[in-house]
Structures are given as C-alpha cells and as structure tokens.
Image 1 (cartoon, rainbow, N blue to C red):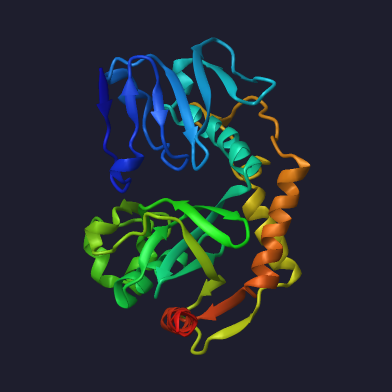
Image 2 (tube, one colour):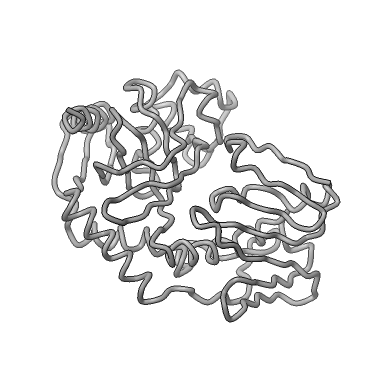
Length: 326
C-alpha cells in the first residue's frame, strides 16, 4: 500500500511516498508534510530520508515517550526522537530534526543548503542572496515575469563547488509577502485575502505555474551572484563589490546556519518551546568547503552588492546576463 500526498507549490517529482514500512523523502527540500498525513495513510511513524544528489540515506525514528530526547548514532545515519505526541505539532519537530542530518550528508559531498534564490536568465544561472526582506522574491518575480527567466529555486537552494559553482536543486514554491506584493507587484494582490491585518508578516505559498512562471529542473552553472537590497525609496542603483567584512560574515552565517544549528532547532509544543540539546554536526572539512565557496563567490565571480529600486536592480542583472551570454 502506498499513497502520494500533494502539496501546493511542490513539484510531483519531490513528493513523499507513504508506505506501510517507511516514508521516503526524495529531496532534502521536500519536508513539508504532516504527521497526520502519515497516520491517515496507516503508515507507522518511521521516516526514511534520501539525500540528493548522492542518495545516501538515513533513518529518523519517532518513539512515543514522556521525556524529550534526541539520540544520534555514531555514524550520524540514524536518529531517534522521543517526544510525547502532544508536543510534535503535526510532525514539524520531526522534520526540523531531519535538516541537520541531511545537511551533514550534503556538506560531506561538497554541497550545502543556503538561504537564496536562483534563476536562469539568457541561459545563465544567477544566484540572488540577501537577508529576509532584502527583495530576493520581488527580484525573482520581476526577472521571471518580465524578462522570461526560469525559476531554479526560491528561498532555499542547494549549491556545490567543483570546478565551477552549480545550483543542483531549489525550492520551487514562491513565498509571497503581502506588503512586498502591494508595493512591487500589485497585479498579484488578488492572491491574498482582502483584509490583511499585518501586511509584513502575512505570507502565502504559490506554485510558479499559478502565476505564469517557468521552472528549471536540471542543475545549472552559476555565472553571476548578487547580494541584494531592494529599496524603492532610492532613485539610483548603487553597486560595489560584496567583499566587505559584513558581507563575509553574512555569507558565512548563511552557509553555516543549518549544519551548526544557529538558524534552526526543533521547537516543541503549542508554545514553541526549545527541545532537548541537538549537537552541531560540523567538521573541519565542511568548514573549509564553505570558506572555499565564499572565496569563489567573491574572488572568481566578483559578486556585486546591488542597492536601489527594483526596476534598476533587475534591469542591471538582466543586462549583465545578456552580455555574458554573447
């Protein structure tokens, strides 16, 4: 017996197959399923994850218990989560507990998960970085809807450095913030409720095809990278090299936040209490790989920091892609 669960914004090829014996998650970015879904499929609560692109798997078990405890095997391929069912919040605890193990396997093979967007413009892979609210999604929408770019990933991307930098996978769902849509893409406000009480915090997930955006499914070589700060109060575009101290620290934090658990940790119960201690799975070789990747962005790709209004920022990115494609 098996059942396939659909999730808005997630491609079918990344869907979870729920079996009586296990649950296989094909993609490390495809963890947005619920504990209740699995119960409804009469599947025992055993989760088996497979990580791309190497397909080295591990197993995450859940045991009903009166204590809160996480146990990791010595080979870091097996984890036992012991929590009362009442604290699992529809499985979110289990999914967040999986991320560090997946990330460890990724960085073992020279890949990592970063908070970024990636689009393909004129056949050129373009990596867009910046903290929350910097305008990455607004730039993605503009590049895809106005310039015909393809979406490789939004919000989270898996990147790897060999002879060149590649984006091998990315989340295809678009997380839209109401206040940004009102300002930059008012034609999409119909996707939200008419009355939004907190326009900054209100977000929805939309599949690319719902708004006419094509996606890139195959890995792509990254030819350009930008650190964005979209600011529509400015009239001009400001551009400089993203190699200052704060740029280096931002990139290091971005590339380290999952493996070192500085950006996420399992939270339990209705009040989102902190769970038991989960150790960092970082290693020196992972650290050296992240530093090499930062060096490649800054020294090889000569990553720019772009600050300015959306139309100027996106126009510059599109023009540079066209120039490189010649």
